[in-house]
Amino acid sequence: MTVASSYFRFGFRVLRGVVFHRHADRCGKLLRVCGSVKVNRQPQTTLNLGSHIMIYQNVGFYLEERGAKIEIGDHTFINRRTEIMCRERVSIGQHCAISWDVTIMDTDYHHINGISLARPVVIEDHVWVGCKSTILKGVTIGQGSIIAAGSLVNRDVPPFSLVGGVPARILKRDVKWSK
Image (cartoon, rainbow, N blue to C red; front, side):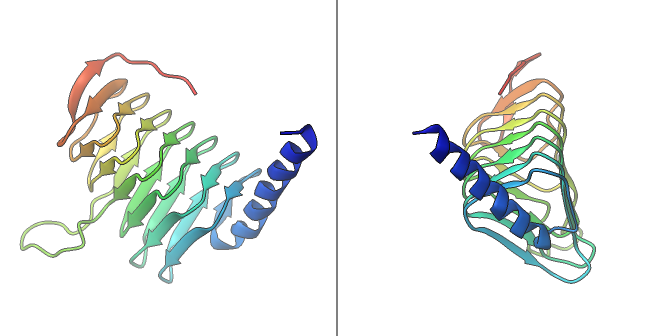
């Protein structure tokens, strides 16, 4: 690949990001969008994106109820075919790496007597979520943690932990990772 074609691709991604701004309520600088992204929102919902975010093709943002809020921090990337489904609140911190085919949902979409339909999902700063993982409602993933590929996260993850499996359990503590 030549330097000129590399700059062209970078510029095209930034241009798509500029066009994508109309879907967000707040959007920081240098949003890069690499392909089509689906945003399905109800009235009175909020989509806030930080600076230096990269969103790959076929990512879906679904804000399903009035008052739903999705927030994504600076320097985070979200890879192909990831879906974020929100009825209340989904918060993704700064410097996070969300791999492809990840599902993040703060609702289970079904009414069961005595069980809350939606509970917020919080992914703190510098979290790496492996491909084909699912993060369910009410979960907080601590800073610096790693979610192994194919995991089902249905309970909180302590900071700097590696979790994996179905359901996810702690495999290692005091982990560190870098992009």
